[in-house]
Amino acid sequence: MSNAEPSSKVSAAAPGRTIKAELAGIVEAAARWSPARSKQAKITSFRKKPLLLGLAIAGVIAVVAVAPQMAVAVKQTRNVFGLTLPQASEQSRSAALQEVSLALPSYDSVASLEAAPVAALPEWQRIVVRSGETLSNIFERVGLGLGVMNAVLATSTDAKGLTRLFPGDEFRFQTDQDGLTKLSVDIDERNELLIERAGDGFKSRQIKQDLEFRTREAAGVIRSSLFRDAGKAGLSDQLILDMVEVFGFDVDFALDLRPGDRFSVVFDEAWRNGERLRSGGILAATFVNQGKSYAAYRMTLDDGSVEYFGADGRPLKKGFLRTPVQFSRISSGFSIARRHPILGSMRAHKGVDYAAPSGTPIRAAGDGTITFRGWKGGYGNVIEIQHFSGYSTLYGHMSRFDPSFKKGSKVSQGDVIGAVGMTGLATGPHLHYEFRINGQHRDPVTVDLPRAEPLKGGEFNRFIALTQPLTVRLNQLAGLQVVASAE
Image (cartoon, rainbow, N blue to C red):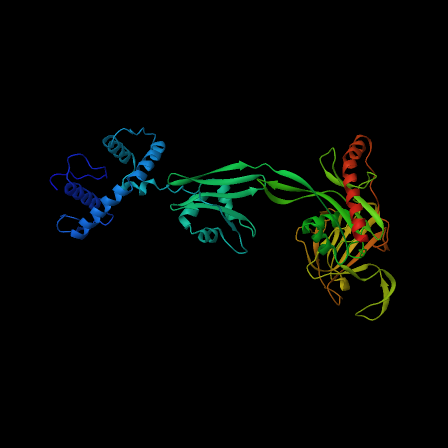
């Protein structure tokens, strides 16, 4: 082995070197290339390893046998590494092979050629607040302690407000091996609170969010129930309630609905960063009830208020709601003589009873002032409201009063003044509702309700320009529904 210097690279045999010396160099090089570098696996003597000598001789014979193919491979390698290989002599070819071997990676460096993993950005973890949860519960669910929570709250006044939680609120956390990196919470739909790690603490800032409103359409036919069929058509529960409120002055949705009634709605939706937030509201709608068609168009007036108008430009909002309890049924109508279900005697029933579950909200039928709130004999808990021009209303058998309204309080149409119950002489939960004009009782179901004046002048012209394209869309939807119902 003294005739050959150890080499970590394999090259062609140099002139003047013996076969034995060359073989010894190959074996020693193979020992250093071996992945198993333990003391027992080292080759320390050529003579002590006769088996390896035989393998080495066989390897040399194999190299000689495949020399032409190796030359072709080397020629191809020239293109890979940009080398110019000499072709004249065996000696120059050997030198070229050595040059190539210098450019090739060594065994020890092969692992370094593997692609380094790209560090993935932490994903946002969305946490929705459950009923009864506190902010500390939220942080515990993400694996963060009270120290982190207190550091977050200390960043700003907005951050301190995170302790006021409501079921359904959403927190978005981003964490890494060191803990919290970012926390995102919506202050409202247009403003986001972003809290980020900064050194050993955190910093917070507000980010303004742009809303995008997209227009959508829906239409359907009532076959079983309003909520079921309108939901199938693509209306959310809130949009269904909006539709009931818009047409509630003309259609009693507790009493007047019939199979075959149809609706068409053009509405908008609020979107932010590609995510749908909510329904924006009804832009225009039609409702066909028992063959009679009603239309509604939303318009912002010059004073900034928003109202719905019929096709003639007259406000749909009337002086009074047709019914003060939504989605109820009439259990007892207006009558001159009716046998009282508890007393058994015949007496006039000067109102309408709306059966509904206990706790159902009761709304003020119109603007006015509360003149009585308390207990009144067989009526149980009662509220009376004095309206304009001699109109008044009474609400009986209430389970509770809204604490916001006392005797003398001003109320607006649609305000929730209490809830349905069965106080006084009542066999079941219901609202007893009376409607009076100058002290005379009238049937709330059939009485003509006072109407507002239509739009005039410039506002009417603007209304016509606004409604024309919406009317085209509603007519198209209505036409499709006529065809669908016929099929």
